[in-house]
Image (tube, rainbow, N blue to C red; front, side, top):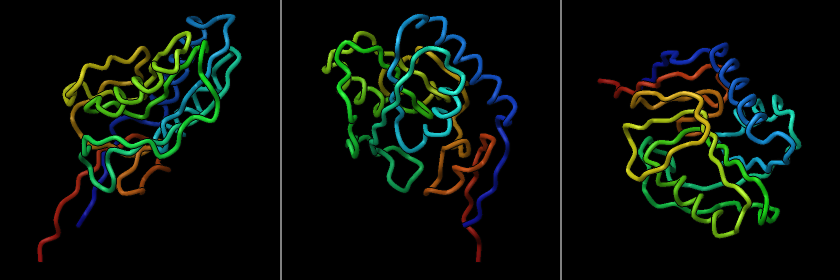
Amino acid sequence: MTETLEVLLSEEQIRERVKELAAQINRDFAGAEVLVVGILKGSFVFLADLVRYLDIPVKVDFMDVSSYGMTTESSGEVRILKDLEQPIERKNVIVVEDIIDSGTTLKFILGVLQRRRPRSLKVCTFLDKPSRRRVLVIPDYNGFSIPDHFVVGYGLDYAEQYRNLPDICIINTEQDSE
């Protein structure tokens, strides 16, 4: 199988947009503390950059959920692999996602967290693919809306590869002919 990459969003575009998102969160939560919940593994690069631009008091925790496995299509079944290490009751919580695709995983996560009675529960996604949505989920903070391509880089992977790329790239996979 041959994989080719095409840059969709450059490192510079990403950096500027992350600064803008942080500025918006700083305004919305001025004077308040937030708990930023990164959804592993894909969000870790975006989350690290985002929190560096936050001027408000911030704590960080992580959840790990699975709905993809080693494919480019969501299975639709969501499992919690790692839960939060701290309670969120009466806290301002911002869920940080790498990408919203079908919305199934995020809807599941939001349902779990809402039952824990946070003061507020917001979603900050780096990428949004609204054309793929199967359930209604609208992010409060959205980096970029993108067309229906499978993308890698800036924390996003294909079979655990490409997370280290500084850009967001469209990955095209083609079967090698014999």
